[in-house]
Image (cartoon, one colour):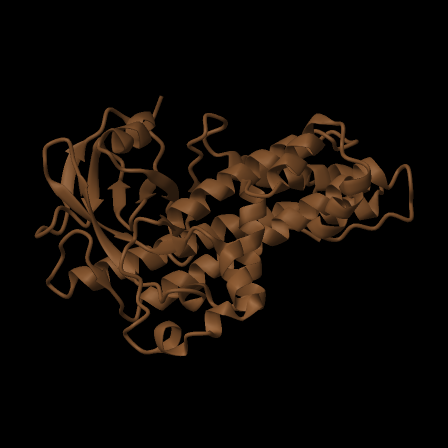
Length: 364
């Protein structure tokens, strides 16, 4: 089989990139500290991601450049690391658009609208992850340009706040997807029994579940994820923190960026970035709501006194976004099984087809 004519740029955790063209050689950028790049052989077109993983790097996603117009954006796909479909986010984006088409053909307008919005929102979350990855890369190269790079150094520059802004944008869009899924669940599982039920966000669905918990498998999975301390509850807490309380980077201790070194099998070390996110969003909200946070203004607000000094009790922003998006896509897959229609790929049938003098088809 001929090798696909596509250039792939793999995004890795920490801001690095692995580039592969139309041969069996890949290039790591930036390379080990002190060098611009590092080349290594891959086993073939289909082994790129496992070859990158075997080096000790975590694949976040991949840009596919198919040629043609250089001004077009790449085809971006987040990589799934959870043992399901390798490209579950992209697969779900397509599936929900096909469900929307099936609902349109069946003249079910409300169902069409919800499915179309879910498809759109999956793709929005995918792109937010890419924006975050791009912010990491800019942060990484910005630090390298300073001429100094050693492990576990904290720093702040013009790129740092952009990393946190990109992460906040992801949190908001991911929470919108969560709410759309709650609306879909209500539409197909609750409204057929009571047309007065109207759910537009997760809060409304949870209120209903307090009195009548779900019994179906997808509903049980959905509800379990929203229990206190579970991943979807935590996602909502992060979202509530940045939307209703304070910017993430200054909600508690002032957050900075940290340098990392990733050791390769041959002992070389690749530079990487960590953008720390506090592990306790609900506690931060609580301390601000109660007023406790404001009891010591000198400690909590004085310049240079409130910087985070330890990255260990925190999660990396891109790692969190990547993992939570995989879980969201898996939840989308589970809930899609409740759809009363079979996904239908749109068929475009041209009418009044004519050929102009230049030979290009014209449709009217």
